[in-house]
Amino acid sequence: MKRYTIPFKKLQLKPHQIWVNQWFLLTSGDYQKKHYNTMTVAWGSLGIMWNKPFCQVVVRPTRFTYQFMEAYDTFTLCAFPAQFKKALKLLGTKSGREGDKIKESGLTVIASRKVPAPAFEEAELIMECKKIYWQDFDPGHFLDHSIQSAYPHKDYHRIYFGEIFHIAGTQDFLSKLSPFRRQQN
Image (tube, rainbow, N blue to C red; front, side, top):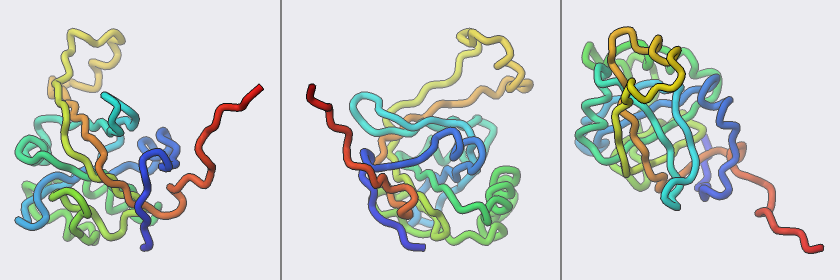
């Protein structure tokens, strides 16, 4: 698949669509050391924080990927075309503790361009990130009490903010519009 380097300011995507319907693979670890794990994520955000392009992901401490997010400074988020939905479902429901779920998925692990965490050859969008902040959800701060129903086992997510260092994607993710310019009256 042909991917192009995409500056953050030229990244074009529909955040709700990609998080809710398409999903991402969150991968942390070190490609060269062959020590990494991945999981499917459908909750998160993208934007600007502290004047840096960032993505925010959440991982429960019970997930195997949590160990990798804690041990390594970098991670990737990869989005895939629709034909890989079955592989993403498998990677979101099986644990890497129990075997080689990546091999079972049929996806191909590749080196990233700027960070040690690996990416996937079949991805149509790859965001390479370095952790810049983390915090655990505090249920005492939930203002909507229905949120608590997402945590019947009290396994509250850890939030990670990652500065986006490199984006590679197909032309579908490259904005064709010229940058916004203020109109003069």
